[in-house]
Image (cartoon, rainbow, N blue to C red):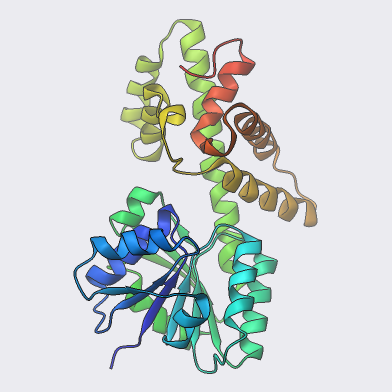
Length: 305
């Protein structure tokens, strides 16, 4: 008999991951969904086939009914609060799988507290944008005891993701350490694009000519982010794809990790300063691609292209 699954947390990534669990996860029971804003859970459930999902009234309710509980929330405080609430109940024998992007120390702490309650844990941060989550194209990073990692794999490749990076029998925090360092590559890519597009416009080359180079040499994320910047999507969106506060959280974790081991991440420092400018200019609606607007401001241009 297949286990009962629950999902806690419905940000931009969580919605797509839930949809793919329901549609491709071979579940024989409805996916139990909980979100702090209940309407989000109800709205998602309404888009799925009848009987494929049901909305829980609380974290405790979701956990009590489930064998495997996936969590994907915004930051370290949110996941600590979520797990602490869950662990107030009897969770013996249950498996918690956290897909949040948090500090490795946070991840290791979660694993310790969960184990103390005689439950199991797998860290499962994911790489990819919301569109990749929708299309089941994420890269899942799994860390934890091998037997528990094997229990999670049926819901990764071919369901929520296209590939797995596995750290079986390694510390839980290895997964989120890779995730934090990996996210700095995205941040630095956006910074490089913002600077290049700004100089292309001011020098007379033109952003469209630079974009031709990106399409030919760097298709994929580079060309996609260039399109977002050139089109003005970075400031026109109603809801950010990668919210500025979350991007700064990741940058802060990366800088702290570098400092702790005696290293520097100068490019991340520059990008984070531009993210601070994005937050000042547009507030919480700011997107990581808004770094383009911050670089434009710095160069004597308007934030909006």
